[in-house]
Image 1 (tube, rainbow, N blue to C red):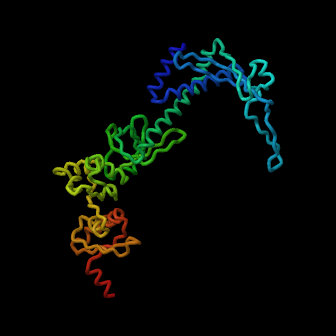
Image 2: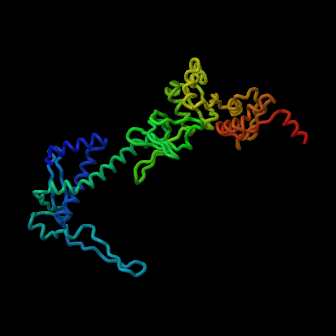
Amino acid sequence: MNGKEFIKALNHIVEEKHISKDVVYEAMELALQTAYKKNFDSKTNVRVEINRETGDIKVFSYLIVVEDVDFGTEEIDEEGNVVKIPPAINPDAQIILEQAEEIVPGIKVGETIEKEVTPEDFGRVAASTAKQVITQKIREAEKNSIIAEFEGKEFEMMLGLVAMEDNRNYYIDLGRTRGILPKSEIIPGEEIKMGTNIKVYITKVENQTKGPLILLSRKNFGFVKRLFETEIPELQDGTIELYGVAREAGVRSKVAVYSNNEKVDAIGACIGEKGCRIGSILKELNGEKVDLVLYSEDPAEYIKNALSPAKDVIVNIIDPVKKEALAIVNDDNLSLAIGKKGSNVVLASRLTKYKINVKTLVQIQEEGNK
């Protein structure tokens, strides 16, 4: 392979793998250095230099100037065994100052003497030997590049293609790599079809030996948060803020919002004209119910709003430090406030960060008479 062919091949790799030219050059130089040492029995240190314009490859052997050759030392460990400490520099790559001055007058300790040792047939030998090393380095660089790209997307939502499925997971094509969507992390009751596009929330990005691990979810509360931020322009420009999300996937989510502009209705903006905005979100959530809760700095008011769809709720803050509250409702609203299997009050507690006890006036009176 001549220099021009090498540069052409290099550019192809860089474009295809989306990695830095510097990384590829460094991998090539390391591979060629290894190939030279292996095939030409080099005992001295060598370095390989690739001309990044012409593609020409040159090999240089070098000697480091030292006061005395360091052959390493020996030490006695705690158990009385002799432990050999290797030298910092290969003894074959060292030359004492006196000898070095005969070659290069005026040279100093720490400097190097170099000599080009490029064999005539080095290109052929190096190409066959370096292939495996280069492939490995390129894979490592590609893996690191993918990790760097997706680290900034952790806790974000992406659109991917459902590519594969096994007993436990769906594998989602995210472009340069695939993420894992466990079947335990899909919305209960939803059907995932192969070859379709799907929105997913990235919960974890981890660099593993075999490659990047990207875990996905549609069940995480963050998925609902990102859906709202995508669908509601006022959330994107800061007119409305999303204060919090509490979710029981497939059943109900409670989303607390408030407006920074008194002229903008936070809940109305989330619903949209004829329910178009919230409709898109509900469709993505496979029919999961969503309660829009108006956030208030007054804990009692906030808890009252969070217990929707229950109405006529009276809230007393029992202990602001321990964050305990009593919600008083009439008989007609008791089941709504508590929710099926207690889901409504549990979600309201998660959203407001208060332990909420729901009772009717009759229950309170009966407890008082005991």
